[in-house]
Picture 1 (cartoon, rainbow, N blue to C red):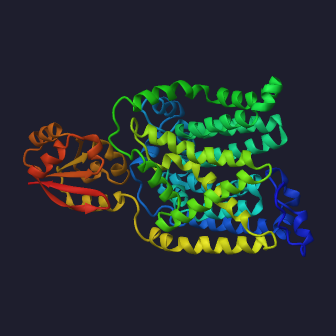
Picture 2 (picture 1 turned 180 degrees about the vertical axis):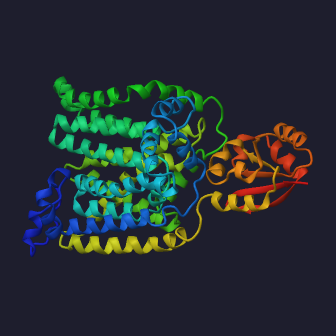
Picture 3 (picture 1 turned 90 degrees about the horizontal axis):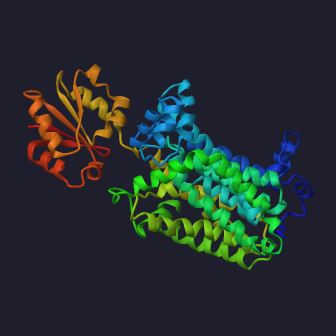
Length: 499
């Protein structure tokens, strides 16, 4: 049973509760917002979340991966499907298809980032309902507040990639999974499978989280299954819903796995750095907050573990937080790994933290605790956001292209290193208009060939840190150091000029 912290002096509040998504209808929404304090707090968090995610949405230039999104989105839907299953990209075609239709509105940074920002906002109420189903309204509102002001989540809400998309769909999948367990409803099991499929169509790596959910279902239902094999039917229906909807991707996923593990990773983080760096980023990039959050999450899971009828929730949170990190530490030795791939873990980390507040004495007004917590969480995030909205956090290809245009002369060579960096550069820079010759290079051999062709013209070499991944031998940088002059660095973009 859930702990009832309702203020007895306000009997009308209990009448308009938000216990789950199904409790909200257009007919009672007005009264819910008017009388329910948690609904009012959630509405405030939605507004704050919208401001944080849409403010200065086009401030940063597109970086490499966002430029890839634009490049893919320009293709036909068939072309998107073909390329995403053959190039080794870690994102399936769903997000690119969504962006394909968004291009009808234009191709600005704001348009490309609009869907990630929107789904980032929509994830806030889903976060509340998740926490509400697991550990009550107080835990839900605290978890929603943590997501609202999460520096990690805001950053990827302003990134034209699929990370907030996969988090949104996977959070909904887990929410319907909880409802399916509670009500044993076939429609909920189907919805669970559908949203798992949408998450998988958004990002391949969420397959780990999906597998954990099905494993959890079999663990907690094992006694029923042993007694009556027919009780496994709802779980199988959810699984079949997922498999049928993702069958076009499954073969491609296997191909991509072998493609990405065929050689040792040349970028990303590995080993226990995957765990430590990701947890720090999840916790606002502050060491003291990381310690506090980890302690609170442990307390929250401990509360659920020893609480009546809550052990299955404790197991769920522990599995969704711990197992993805174990898998990622293992995979990091054979494939590139980044904290952003684990964004689908974020809601369960925050839910565990929210659950810790249930250790407070029952006679304390939970609504006041929630208000204080929201204020404190918001205040702690102010220093980060003050800097975030006034300082570039991505490569400034926009400013760099303006400088390059002013610096070059007709006929000059612009050598982009590594070659795929033409994607973000050419979003802003037009070599045809600038009357330059743009070429690509990733090795000393290619640079020598360009040197022989350019004759008396000047060559500008545009280099980013990705050259270490594209040319791990290091001969390209050695050639540059020996044959060019370094002109400077602009937000991670280095410029060399031929001597």
